Length: 456
Ligand SMILES: [Ca+2]
Image 1 (cartoon, rainbow, N blue to C red):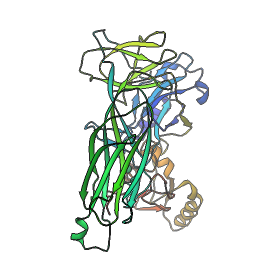
Image 2: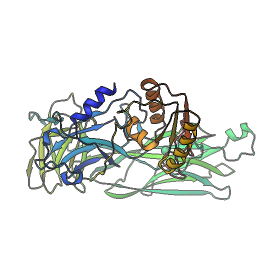
Image 3: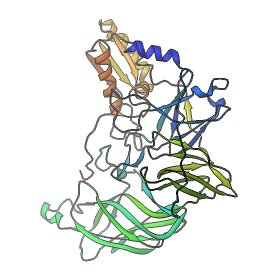
Image 4: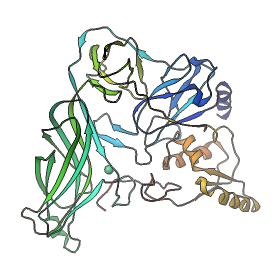
């Protein structure tokens, strides 16, 4: 297998690791990575699938891009959160930085595009979902189940309100649906189990000061309770979502955990800050004519219905801030305000290119490499062939650059066992905590955890 990889390395130029934090269209100037003067048709971009769980057999997949004649590159970058096929939101618990890999030379790269025949006008608005979630607290100390905040009303207080503001643009109608996730908590640990189950959580929800939902329930939950209700009064700019814990007929104090909320609203095709993400119909529907407003110049548009196969839209008409184009139904991203990714000269193949013969593998954080090398000398004095590997290299090679993934370590060990000489010992050197993203603490070598239980 390594011979095939070595041959591949001869055919390509240097690798560049491209890091992105949020969804958008990104631009890489040729000067940023020293690729001026090369054949621009051979520039290629890859991604490992942007998945939370990676497997040792996963391969990098090529992502279609757009390359200007001066070899600067435009690509659509996804975030590590979003919506699955079932419409449920997801968030990678290990890292918020997505990684792409750029190289050049050899065969031509993918430049997928779409065009379509003009059949029918798209509607004047579409449904968009804002997912608003912060991971600030981890009561279960389980890295897969973070909450936004614990909200506690004391027994002396009749009401406690918490406000959460969010920004929204392009509101077409003021009516929307708001979905939110909360957990009840036992309010008094000194009570017997049956008594605790009888304690009521009374909540009211507000949008911009107006109540849209009032409910109560009893006890404590392992998984979030998800409520969804219609609300009115959504407007452009800053809006306020409020949770109130109120006493009602309950006698004691009350505690809930707030996790996230979502706003589903109708949105017009108006760009904000040079960006517009929009969707209408699906890829099986007839071609549509889309009309976008609010761009100061002709935007670059990608069809991102399949986010790892973005297709650039050609033939975009631009007349006095109105953009028209035709294409199949689905999801699109249009931009004149390109983001700049972080670029590093690292490789996704350096650990796979040379087979090794080792008895002992030491995996550690870059901070501890010198200590690990001392241990390696000691072990080699005992006759054990020892290799020291940094978690950074392991992430690049075995989770395609996604950091803090315990699956990367598992995939690396699987690879070493299957392709090298079946090493016998492995040492993980460095503290590991449930706090994968080092939000509260510093994680050095991530442990594997399973389960999402918050009410522990
Ligand atoms: Ca959460």
